[in-house]
Length: 395
Image (cartoon, rainbow, N blue to C red; front, side, top):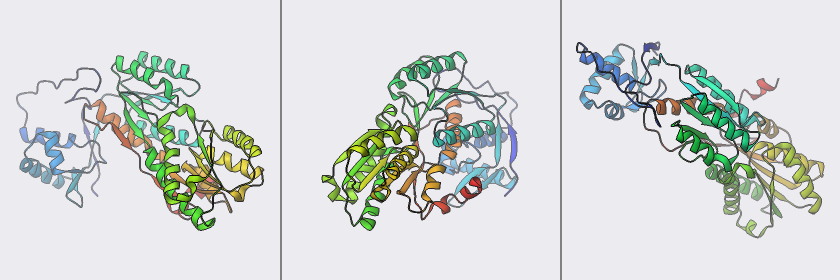
């Protein structure tokens, strides 16, 4: 592959920032070379250097006739600035370097879970690579703190904010403040009114896990099940709750006999310690029985496993989780673990996708209202294939 070329250009030229600001294209000089001008517009039509775009898409973005765009692309390929890919798509080998350093706010849900740490780390790396300044505030401690942080980000003059706070009930108030200030929002995992959503397709991820758990119960327990324990994080609201609802639906779809099985719900607050305590209390009230545990995230799943093990009932629970963090993957490798699987969201890649959305918004390009991460079911059988480097990290 030819070496990538560096080309200076202003990221804001040619479009307005979503939600406010008037970035108008300056009047061009009269002595421009039209062919070069068109070639530059074509290069700028790529959203970033990783995008694969078709001739039709590039022509539509630039307003060029397809025949003109095709000739320009052939020239750029010859000069090593664009490459042609299989399937008729193209990829730019030019990195657009902005003279302006965008300032992005990041309201994080803290570092209390491995998932949150992975999201924050990936966003830091992606912002640094993109040359963006990231102003980080920990908005996880309370709804009041999340609101104060929104006010501060407005005062700090950020151009866009990434909201990853977990207090769903104040999301409308936070969003209203940013909308009033004309600051666009990317909401991670917890939807905010008027924001572009990025994160899990919670219900589909839940279905994936529930179906796999039902299949496991059929194969290992001959389809016999006595109870279903659902573990939620109430403060995160209705949308993350869909992952547990999806798991239940997937389980019942695969194991119809479980529709008559007693169901119990607890709020583990998304943490290991809280889940350990509430499941401990629940087990004291229940006689030993084969239990399917549907956990909203890995800390909840691991807390439930610890509680069942303390009660001497590890062989009587089958656990399905969400997120597939390093701790859950380590648990899957443990012999005789009750953890059947965990659905991966790949938070280590969130940053690059969020920054890609931010670039589009800040340059006035259209973005979908919701962008979902990909999901995969991680089990004991495939964990090393998906995450071969885990053992190096634990050494």
